[in-house]
Image 1 (tube, helix red, strand yellow):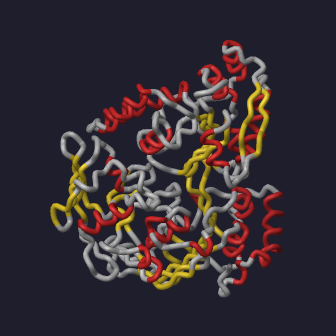
Image 2 (tube, helix red, strand yellow; image 1 turned 90 degrees about the vertical axis):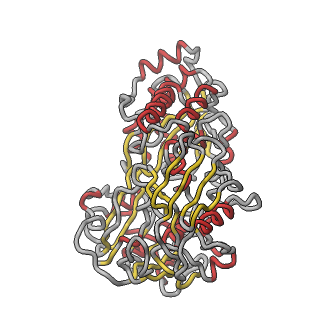
Image 3 (tube, helix red, strand yellow; image 1 turned 60 degrees about the vertical axis):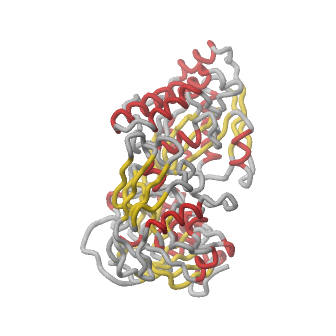
Length: 524
């Protein structure tokens, strides 16, 4: 399906332009860095105009219900119309939004949240009852709303409004990082008694833009909310255009049919960077790239084998080959640059001699292992081939097995022993709770250690931030030594903009507050 005002978004209409872009990519043309992009540069903001942003969409089933937001397009539309109590800064720490302040009791199991003065698009004030209604709607056991698991620590039956703009949240257990819950993906605040049918017909939020129109799978048009609590947007209007293929998005940008194209490939970025026609914006540290080793089964139930694999990896070769250089090397830990990241650990380098010695001590000198991969994510198949060749130099035979794009993520959670893996941005605390505790539902490495669980509980119940950081560092040191995630890189998230676009934040990993944030963008 396409919008007749954008005939170039039809797939057939882009074949000629795509061929030209591919030729540039094959020539290996490089360019500048994000430091030179006009998109993030300063200047006096100019009021007015419509910005058209192209995203991959979800077809005719798309909805503006913010609690169902799953795709990047869903989240971008939701954050234009709605607010959360908090959101994630570039370092993945929680920053106040509708919540002006929060304060816990001494035992960290009751939190008082004070709302700022803000209004919905229809003029009604945002109140404590709206907050409780929104969270109870998300937690409905009959629904599958995105933020349900994140809100699980809250006892919503016991929580209550203590004033028009104050909420007392009662928690099921002490939680020092409760603000992360307030910032959870999909935890948007909607008016009390808003129903599913309201969201696509006439959605009312407290965000920077008001609803104008919505055609699922095609486009959504929003207009400036003059009374937005954080300052009215510079743009008059914002339009989201659906273009599922990357070639369609970049060629719509080149043709002047859109001013912003989300999620471009590294080869596309290299073809156009520094050439003056469009601007390339790289959002650093947006996606962890890793190999996942199952620690509960041979051969990776032996920590010496896991350490050997850490030492087999040539991270620079993986970043250069699998990501076309669009990223930076990892150090076997999630969350590089994020709050609590253990950046004092030495950068791990390839050491094939030590890897062979470890494998010999483990009785795995002629090890053969299957590496599961899929074309489900950019760079996966390339990374698998590169790592196979690296492992051969240490005497390890890797058989690369291609999996289905449709079932890959569910398959690798239970099956196999080694697989390609990636993760988007989230707080380090969330990564641990979702993936590294004994009862974590997405524990792909099968890392199950009661003493590690106890350290997490200790961190959560530690009020002092410095002391809490020390506990997280202790946990990460253990993962660095013997964990199951071989984190070889962190990929850039790549955007393209027209040269006249200003105010696009260049230091915001995907899923953070300033990613796809159009209220601060203007057209020069």
